[in-house]
Length: 244
Image (cartoon, rainbow, N blue to C red; front, side, top):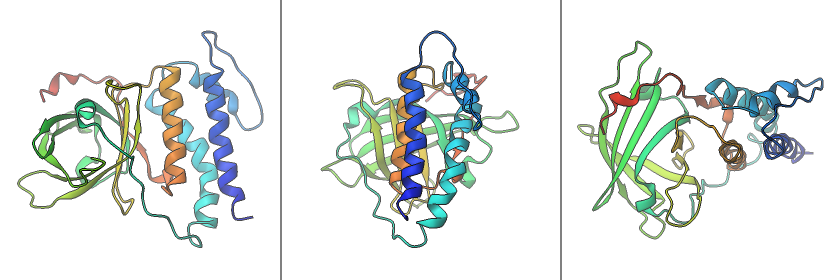
């Protein structure tokens, strides 16, 4: 009985994945009492932040069962990182798709990050637009690789703060050798932070939608509470503010 809720939740995600896989150039609709016609219609075009929120609402309306029934009685396994990160394929421009809100990114939209190679790991420059329309001025720092076998565990610091935070890469979407990674998921061993990054600011293709829902599924399997996940608006953004 205790495994049923998680099976139910993964089944819901699998159904959404099937809808995406069956998508074609013509719009289509399929109605039932759960309102799935709305989900299907929104999967047949460019995904906005509202659309991704709809997917999350579909998932998390059932996810409550998982965390109420299982989280309190079943100890969470340690957070797993990916097996290996090719740092050269991780560099470049990333766009924030979703995160667990923190004080430093509260009210942010149009979130952008640039990574470059340095001798100890990665240089990091983050920027976003606040609710008042002003950009954050940016935060520049570095991420030091602490697990050189995998390159998946780093410590990130933004001066003048002396604090180094965990930067664990727990999921990557690999679109072929020598190509840049298309999605990254970053967290820490406590599961208190979570960032979903994409190479594009908008989720525009069937493949991207499929990859994003698989990321949601993997996060659930790792014990993350997706009810805490906040979608970052990337609509109507002028990225000329980002010079990094």
